[in-house]
Length: 70
Image 1 (tube, rainbow, N blue to C red):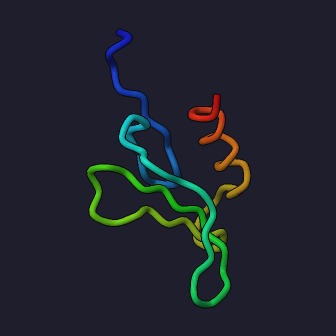
Image 2: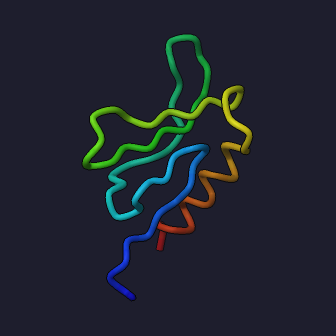
């Protein structure tokens, strides 16, 4: 069972944790802050704006940090 992939749920997306190459906060051209997640296999970067999701961006960033930061 240790070979099973780990997934993180962000909004409506299930993302394979082993494929995440970068994540964090970014600012767009309108100075809006959003959470981004980039994976090896996706063509686009996942972007999550606070007004479009029903979760707290800071909490989700902390959850990602807990998975990856040693």
